[in-house]
Length: 304
Image 1 (cartoon, rainbow, N blue to C red):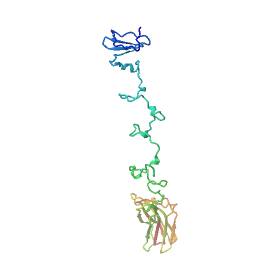
Image 2 (image 1 turned 30 degrees about the horizontal axis):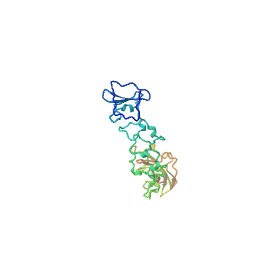
Image 3 (image 1 turned 135 degrees about the vertical axis):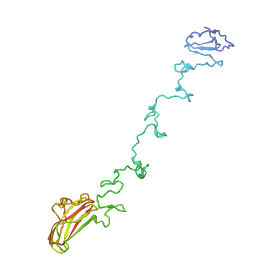
Image 4 (image 1 turned 90 degrees about the vertical axis):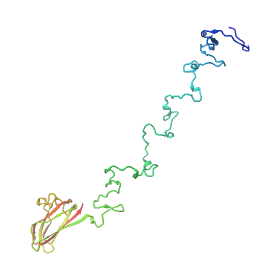
């Protein structure tokens, strides 16, 4: 095949019209040819056809040669700028995770995360002096239960209780016995008068209690003469009034005066019952009396 000198000037080249594409040229050669559509094409030694060629000498449409699997495939990795079409990125979550090549810190993000997050321990932030202290009166009202009650072992929402039924909180926030309360101790006094004659046996007085109390002691006094008397105490409720001998609370240790003008007992642990509830009745019954015409019986009680 003849070669044209590289310095030769050619004014025109005459192409024979080709009905089909020519065979692949020998290695190191290429062919330019004219097809029946009136346009020029080029085939290289690999059999790749380019064309039709534009009038300027630029290649014609050949996008497929640069696409995936094409003979002149172009990798976007070597391109700069932004692609005209938006691209769906390949899965690469791990690159944004902890220690990934493109780790993302949530501290630099705004808005709410899609998933609920477990907060880092930060109780101190909400406590007194913390960066996000919460005032107790800004919280919702508590349930109607005993969770926040004070007790003898916990402060609750007031000063710890001192476990004394006789004390109350004063205006200075301290537990104290009310003035004049005398520790809740009082006296119940009855007078049995024989009208100048020796007192007879039988029921003499009935008293109803409008407060609860505990019986602590008794004392008998006869201001006129020395004599003897035994007085029993019967106790029962309003619904079972009147009490009877079966309701005795002295357990055979009745208040007793024996040939004297005064007697007292400050230990009632031998009685069967020393507790008086609100609404209870006590009947005082004289079991026996000798040489006494006027007797006073005083009971020491502690209000509960």
